[in-house]
Each structure stands twice: as structure tokens, then as C-alpha cells.
Image 1 (cartoon, rainbow, N blue to C red):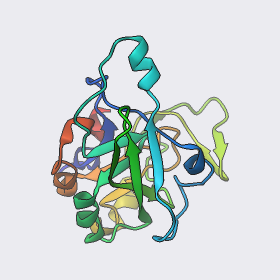
Image 2 (tube, rainbow, N blue to C red):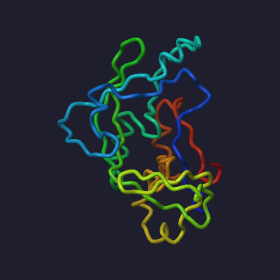
Image 3 (tube, one colour):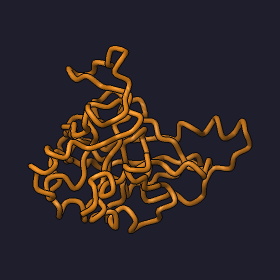
Image 4 (cartoon, helix red, strand yellow):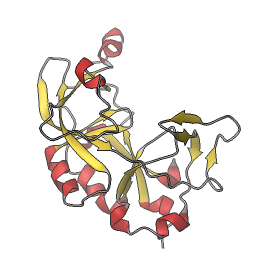
Length: 206
């Protein structure tokens, strides 16, 4: 049987394409706790811009003309409507998705996006087996201690106690590098669209 570190993947922004946008919220969205609170479906959409536009212009990096199906706001994701529909069928714990708009460098609105918010993180990495900075004081955020983790190993006993259906997709807790973690069995959802914007890093290889 595969180790858990071989079954799970971090969803990370593709690094080889500097033309891809790096998102930042507009002023109205930035005033909201959109990355960890659930918002009513009827609430106004979240709006995002390309924070890397000025950087690209200064270095003559052309802005992409093909917007990927997955966009990144730090370690968080905006996904297409088709991906949202597939995720809704799985009833992922603590996951809420809110309609979102990406305004590209050319001013065009791309409205077929949903922001993935995890209202709770899943702290499931082993303090005994993982490699992390445990000499300095952890960063305290929202009442939680966050560590800089260099090599993740899962708490096998904890994962054994939870049905797979309840841990298919989650946001890593207890770590500064709070990646979204995806089980291999549902990777196809995130590969179903234009995948230029995402790379899949096996936890074992991180």
C-alpha cells in the first residue's frame, strides 16, 4: 500500500510561466475575510487583479492571452465552474466556493471563477517525522501556532482514523506554507480544464 505522502499532492502555481497572473484582491474584496470565512451565495462576487502586471511590464514579460482554468491567490485557488460542480458532488468538508471575477491586464472580465475558501484547516502533519523549524517561536495566527515546514510527513494514525471521503481535499493546518492538498483519486478534477496554471507536487517530493 502506498504511503500517504505518495497519495497526496500539493496544488501549486506553475512556476515555469512568468506570464501567468499572480492575483491580488481589489479594494472591496481585500476588506473582507474572504480567505477563511463563508459568504452567502447572494453576496457580491470577489474581484481580483493581476498583482504581477507592473513587474511584467518592467521586465518586458508579455501578459498571457490564455487565462488558465485555475488561478492562484497565494496558495488559494480560483477554479472554473465545471471544477466547482465536480467538487460539489464530493461534499468536501469545510470547503465553500464563492463567485469571483478576474480582471485581466487588458481590462477584460473573466467571470467563470469560484474562490475556494476552507473555513477550517486540517493539521495532519507529524511533528515527530516532519522537518520543520521548531527552534524559533511559531507564528501565531487566529489562535493557531504555524510552523515553517520543510518536509512533510503525515500523521498516519490520524489519517487512518478518518474516512477517505472526508480527507480528499483540504488546506494544510499548522504550517505557514498552508498549501491545498489533494488526494490522487480526484486530481482529474483539477486537470480537466486548461491546466497551464497549476502544477501537482507529490507530498513525498516536496
